[in-house]
Structure formats: C-alpha cells, structure tokens
Length: 140
Image 1: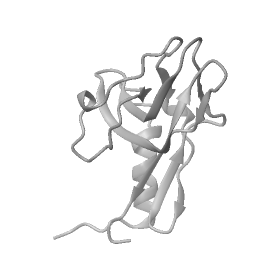
Image 2 (image 1 turned 90 degrees about the vertical axis):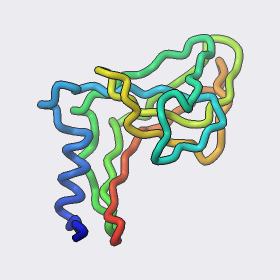
Image 3 (image 1 turned 180 degrees about the vertical axis):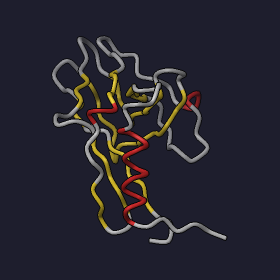
C-alpha cells in the first residue's frame, strides 16, 4: 500500500523538516562546492569538493529563519531568510557549482543543490542566493 500525502501534510512535513526549533540539531550549515558534481539521491558529502578560495567560510542556518512553506500544486517550498546569503573572495577566483546543506551537529549531508550555471566567485563578484527546500507528492 502506498501513502499519498495530502496538501496539508506536505506543508506540515516541509515545515517540520527545516523549522522545528525544538530539535537538538537546531543548526544547518551551507557549504559551497567547487567540484563539477551533479547531486543524486545517493550522493554523499565525500562526493563533493568543498570550496577553498581565500575568504571562504561556511554559513550557519538557523531553523527559526526558514520561511513558512508555501503550497504550489503538489509542492511545498520553504525559503531561508529574508536576505540572500553572500559568499565573496578576499582574493583570487574559484568556480562554484552549487551548495550543500549539512546538519551541523554530525556533518550529515541533508541535500545538495547544483546551480543552473556555475558562478565564479572573486573579490568583485559575490555569490548571492537563498537556500530553499521543496517537498512534493510523487502522485502530484
């Protein structure tokens, strides 16, 4: 028997996944990856090569800053924060292909997102984006 999640369930599930501040693992971490890697369901943290340009630093995501999921068709989407995250270099350049969201408490890869096009970070070109998560019913 298959479970079919209703619209309200998709919203609640998405909200609990990223916004539940009562959980002990209250922090996520965003890491950029420089490897030309396409994420899959079976991807591991070790499949990606983390950025290492001058000035790079991982950024912590607080569960309380995730937006309330919005429903569009059979998908619930939550976007992080009110302002985009910013990543810039102090010198040099590096091509970035996407970002990883990792549970900070134990470094478990939660999800990976590859940008539509790579971006070259430099002292004059900052990478700006808002992490997001979308959950959907496969029965749409």
